[in-house]
Length: 100
Image: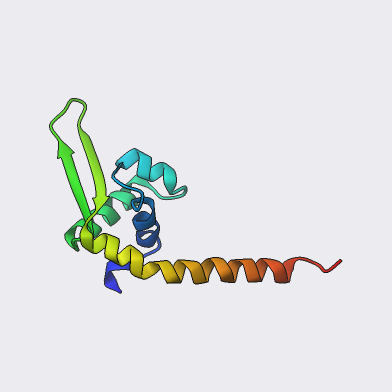
């Protein structure tokens, strides 16, 4: 559970599920996250072997983040939890809608 501890890690995993992304692209997919927090969370996920960081020797510098095999397996394990969350939100929204 420590691997996905925090508000943003699961969202970062889902953002990287489509493939490698640069830092700015990942940040745009996560409205509300600060650059500092995103960098910190990516470093922690990298240290846990969930995210791979690829730095290219270019000017300007280019860095891409992608999921490792463990990261893809973790995303697959989290998929049922995401489905449950979507179902729960839909149920809550239906309860808030006044009957006609």
